Image (cartoon, rainbow, N blue to C red):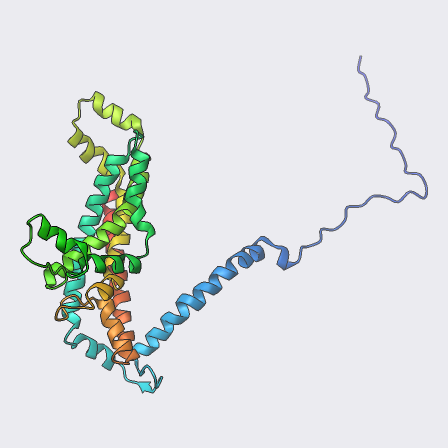
Length: 319
């Protein structure tokens, strides 16, 4: 016996009752869209970048191609005379060699000491927090202030270091820490290592603490020695932090100015003139913004090449 499904009769709406209809979608105005909001959030940063970076960069590029005295302003285009004057300058290549030498020495000592300090304080032992703070404290001091402080320390007449070395019998007379090219270079490197080693230690310490302890425990269970663990586990897993330290140190060393300007003024006999000091001399002593702009463009291109080479090398090592 088949049963029929009885459907209820459709209920007619009462007379006078308006029928409900779907309202057409209203498109939101463009200023309320996600793209417009994103542009609004990024606009202040983009404006700052354009005003403080792109426009000055274009202006320096124009200066490098023009005859542009500091006080007289733009005169005429003289490209490529400024670049040829820079490359033929008496101090350009000595300044390049000295800047590269300083970069190699400062970077090696900074990263080596920072890694040693990070390994010493990576464990949460009693007093480790105190030593982390002590190592990091010099980084809170401004570079110009630190250079002035060390200038007083290095002074043969008023500084305490010369008298201290004489009292302990390490020197027969007043010590001139900034009197020779080698002593001036190493004294400046000591200042930079003292100031920035704690900062790089903090970067490497964060990298060390991100390495899982299970990896070290597995290596110890396999009988690996400390040196094997350091070479095979710590250094490979610490590579991103080391790359960041290397990038910051190389860039900062190639742009060195404050420490040498305050401590040595480029002396003795222009032996400690960096490339950035040379830009300062061309712009504010020789009053030639065109040559200073050409030097600035050369330094910018060199930084791009160095950073690109570092990124390629680190990417190749990761692969």
